[in-house]
Structures are given as C-alpha cells and as structure tokens.
Image (cartoon, rainbow, N blue to C red):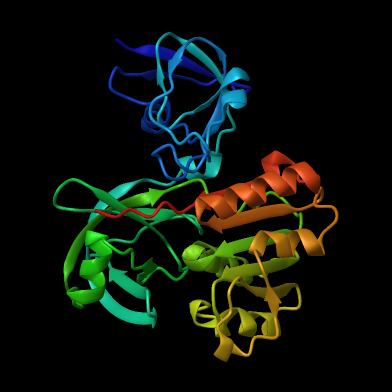
Length: 338
C-alpha cells in the first residue's frame, strides 16, 4: 500500500511505496531532504510528523531520544508511513539538482597518509565526470550488495580524479582489502553523489568547520571550493585528532592560513604522544570551539567526524552558545566492521 506525504512549509507532495522509507521516496521523486548515513545513526534527516502515523524503523536511541519522539520527531531515513502524512522538513534545493549515477571507476592512486589513513584517487571512464557539491560522499558497491560510504575530499572544480581518505577499520573487510591487497588500476563500482553536507552559499555568515579525524576529507573539499570562489566569508577550521601523526595533512591547512587572510587553522589533540612535543591546543575539539566563542548566534557550523563528536558539538553549540539549529550542518561517520 502506498501513502501520500505532504512537506511543510513548501506544500510539495510525494508518494511512498510500501517498501520505501520516507527519505528514499522523497529522493526518488526529486525532493532532497537533509540526510547523511541513511541507517538511523547520524540524525541528519531528523524531522517532525505533523499529521499521520509512522513505523519508526531501526535507529540508535542516542540519535532519536524518547522526548523527541513525544514531540513528533522521526528519522526519515528509516521511518515508514502507516498512513498519509504531513511532515515538517527543510528541503535542499541545490542537492536535488545533482544527478546520482552508478559508475565504474579505476583506482588511480593509493598513498598511505598515516598508519591507518589511505588516500585513494579514483578515475572515472573517459566520457564521464561526477557532478557533486563540495562535502558530499559516494558509496562503493561491493559484490555482496553491501555499501561503503566515503566523503569526497576534492572540490568540484578539480574533478579529474575523485579523492577519498579511508580510515582502516579493524575487522573491516573493505578497508582491510584496501590496506593489504588493493592495487592501482583495480576496478570498482560506486554510486553518488549523496548527502546534504555541503556549503550553503546563499549565506554570508562566518563559518566554523569542526573536523574529527578523517572528517577532514569533506571539509577539505569545501574549503578548497571556497578558496577557488575567492569567498570573503571568514572561516576557521578546528581539526581534532588523538596525536600529532593523526593530523595526516596538517601542512595543507597551515599553508591555507598563510595564503588566505580570512582563514585560520586550530589543530586540537586529545592525547598527544610524549614525543610529539606538542605546544598547541589539547582536549576535545568541540570544547576548543566553546572556549573560543561565547556567542555563535551569527555563525554557521559545519561538523564532520564520529557521531559522538557531532552530537556533542550540536548539543553544546545550540544549547549553550545560541547557534540556531538550522545553522548546524553535519555528516557523522559510522564505521562498519564485518
């Protein structure tokens, strides 16, 4: 049985088929709602049901709390309608204009950036280019039907190759293969681009970027896009990692800081090694932002990394620093092991 969903405030309507989630149906019909992981873990797709009943699907309780359910909140990526619905959701017009493709690709380059981080460049067929927004991601399609998602680390204008930063997940079949057996010129298949983590270019607010580990990848693409556009917006990057070696491309934002007067870089280590001789900031990366900003009401924040970091940043920035919820944009990385 299918159900009709009406989006407020736009008034747009779409039909959800029996085997679809609300998000999947919206995307199929060309309405791009905010989303990230698509498995109930990150919270990016959270919205409100104004009328109707839903099956909430499988989700992490830390992502959709009981009091939010009482307020009518759902995760559109896992929820399915049980009746016609009226939902309250913000639509992403720009992402909806980007076609999603399924393409073969060739591994062009593999370069180990740290003990557990690999830079991968993939090359598309000669007659193909991937249109995407800086910050979006692709899904590698594995032979058993599973997917592995990785953020695009290059800006859209530099699209000869797609650059990805892969962290080795202990027990992860795909990344273990990448780190131990994959070779240049190997053939893979992917689908993309996906995701609502991209720059809102209709704003002139100053921007705070918060990266945890390889969460630097999409933010790198965003910043390189902004630099290419000669954006005049003030930008600051807080990049958190455990030890100095985990800031695997630190020389790049250091160079950006030298080249762009409206950009600053603040690395933060949570557990620096004794031989790091670290003189910089320490602790949790979101706490460094809290220490530096008493009022975030006039800012936009773009955060990417582990779900715990993203959740802590969202909650503390909005609840204690006045950041509007609509000005917090995030992509939470959910690592998968087999």
